[in-house]
Image 1 (cartoon, rainbow, N blue to C red):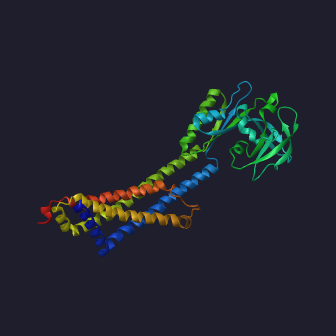
Image 2: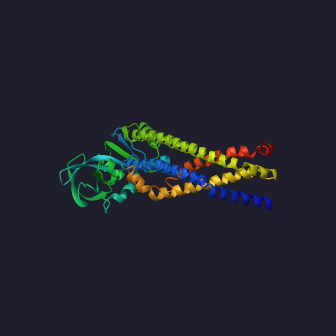
Image 3: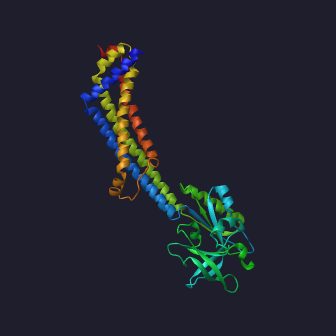
Amino acid sequence: MISWILTVLYLAKDTLHRWLTRISSPLSRVLVVFFLTLCALFFLGNYVIITKTVHEQLVKQGGNLVIANLVHNREHPCSLPSRREMREKLGVDSWCINSQGSATLPNRRNCGIYSYDFSRSSQFAPLLSPNGGPVLLTGTQEPKVPPGPCTLTFNIGGEPVQRDIMVRCLPDEHPLLRLLAGGGVIVPPDSMPDAASYGGMSSMIVIIPDLQSAADIARVEHFLDRYMKLEGGNGNIISAASIIERLDRIMSNQTQCRLGFCAGITVIVGILLTALAGMEYRQNEYVYTLMKSFGIHPLMLVGAYLIENTLLVLSAFAAALLVFLRVQHIIISQFFKIESDGLSLAEIRPEIELISCSLLACIIVSSIPIFIAANRQIGRVLK
C-alpha cells in the first residue's frame, strides 16, 4: 500500500515537473482545446438559436394550429369531435364554432355570428357577457368596435333584429380569433332561434401545445379527416404541415453538420493529444521501464497520462463554456446578426454533451499508444 502511494506521488511530481520545465506542452493542449471548444459552442449555439427563433415565430404565426371546416345541412347533420374527446385521443386543446348568420356593426361593417355546442358551454362561458348573453369578440390591436356595450343588427334567417351585446377584446394571438377572422359575435346555443339550430358550417381549430415536428400535425390531420369521413360531411383541413416538414428536413441537415463539426474537433484534438503524450512518454520511457522492473503495473503509467489529459482538457472545456456564457450575446448579435436573449445551460445542454463526448473520445484514443508502449517488454527497452 505504501509503495502504491509513493508511486502515485512520484507520478504526480513527475507530471508537475514536466509542466514547469516544458510549459509549452500543457499550454498547447489547453489553448487548442479552449479555442476549438469555444468555436464549436458558438457554431452549434448559432444553430440552436436559429431553431429556437424559427420555432417561436412559427408558433406565433399559428404553425401549431390545425383548422378544420365541416359543411353540413339539416338533412345530414354532423358535428366535430368534442373538446374532451380531442384531449383524450390526441392530447391537444380545441375550439369549435357553428356559423349561424351575420351581424351589422355600428360602422356598417359586417361580421359573422357563431354559436357552439352545449358540450363546450364551460369553455365559452367565461367569454360571454356578465349576464350570459351574446358577446362580440375582437382583437386588441385593431378592434372592430370599442370595448363595452353595443347594439348590433342580427341577420339570422328572418327579419333583422336589434340586439344589445357586450364587446370584449381578446389577445391578438388567441386561437379563437383565427376562427372568427379577427372578430365575431358569439351567441349561446340556447338563445338561438329554432330556424338557425343547424348552421351551414362548423369550424374547429386544434391547438398543439408542444409542437415538435410535422408528424404532430399529420397525426391531428389524420384523425380529423377520418372523423369527417365517418360523419359523412364535406370539409377541408388547413395547417402548416408542408412548411414544418421542410423545416424538419433543414434541421436534419443541420444535425449532420453538427456531427461533422464535432468529428473534426475530435480528429484535431485527438492527433494533438496522441502526439504530445507519445513524445513525452518516449522521453521518460527509460525511467518508466525501471519502475516496471520494480513491480509497478503498466496500467498505473497509462492512468497517469489519462488523468493528465483529462485534467487539462476539462479545464480548457470549462473555461471555454464560461467564456461562451458570458460573451454569447455580444458575439451572436454582432457577428451572426441574430437578435436573441442568449442561451441557458439547459437549452445548450445537448451541444455540451456532444462536445464533451468528442473530447472524451480524444482522451481515450490518445492513451492507446501509451498503453502499447507501457506494455513493451522490459528487455527491449533496457537493452
